[in-house]
Length: 182
Length: 376
Image (cartoon, rainbow over all chains, first blue to last red):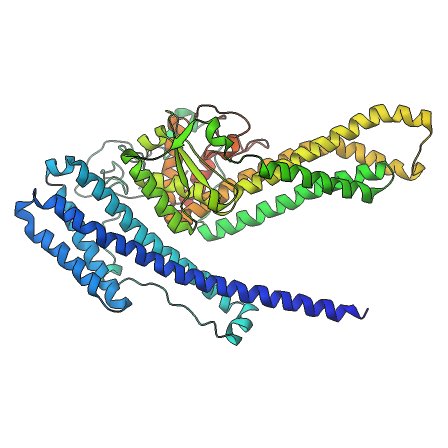
């Protein structure tokens, strides 16, 4: 029966290695998810000039909306730090929404194939941005759950696996819109 | 006020929260409980939420068991546990059969070993034989071009939400509404949808369907299915071999006198005979209930990806009413689709032998996840 301690030792070691690797995998997934968001944001920056180019000939009276979109894009591109960037991105999303609302008013613009496909691309990209953020937050939750649970938390604290931060939207967009539900 | 009843939108068929004034999908005003400035009396507020089953026969059916509020994470975890348990049972049936047959011929351990070998051979064959045959059976072609841009975008969106590599996208030219996913690993997965589905679903419903398929991809359900099918096949083969062997072999044994282990085998022999008769049936029932659990799981996971269970619920309702027929449908591939293309699922079809749960029960669970109280 001398080999029992040995077996136990090997089992503990195997668990140790597996858990450590799991934490590393989770942490890398979070980083990858964060870069996924950037990829989609970049794609949106690239799409906006195309849309503006196609739309501007039709919209002689709506120059103001277009200028706002372009300004918001510039502000988002030059924003420094995650918090400032999140805010600028929020503004850009709002201006794009008002641009699409304007497009709805011009029947010949709505019928334009280019505009329709650009609109679908931008809708898709907007969705991808929010799903990428959702996946980022889900990854953070999985990771945080892991490093706070027994017995993984021993390994996590020993090797300094710290908590990761969630992506949060700016407080204004959290205000609940009043709806008449009865 | 009609508290628990979720109104269906008259225009797009979307299912809304109780008391909503406008459809959450297409912004069409709902005729529901008239608001202060909205006296439009159009559809009766008591209209059945299931588009496909708003027929009068809805009253005659037995009511579904009410489902409490569901959290999609909880639902998904429950389904994972259930299918794991069923799988263990299926394995147990298989190895019990192997051991018993081995015992009947003298050595239980040889029987167990042989059944392991049989399983390995079957499994390897199934694993390496073409995984994308399904695509050609159903005449799917790759979704390129401008008209499928939205579909490709939705697939990419859901792949991001699910955290899997974007799969290849295929379209099947068919009026029926259906979709399936194939591929053993997420890296080589593909999803296919029919043109009938594309024509009649809005963007949110399409998201729900694609999310369901990607949930199958992410949890490697194709592999699950192959393993289960292989086990069932192996059980059937073992039982067949044993039953035939006893019919012909007994005569030989009395003549040759090669008794092997002698009378110690009698108990094993009876057990093996019993198992050989019952095991194929039990294995088939287990396989089908695993399949149904995987469907519930994919629904719950899809709700987690889109965070919009009502989108998938209303897509399922539309598929039920539109008909899920697909060209080239056959028994071999029926389990792959989002709604079984061969069988019409009434609420009583939780029958032991069906690949999918009744669509009404799936819709009800999804609505419970969406915060809609089980109405009825």
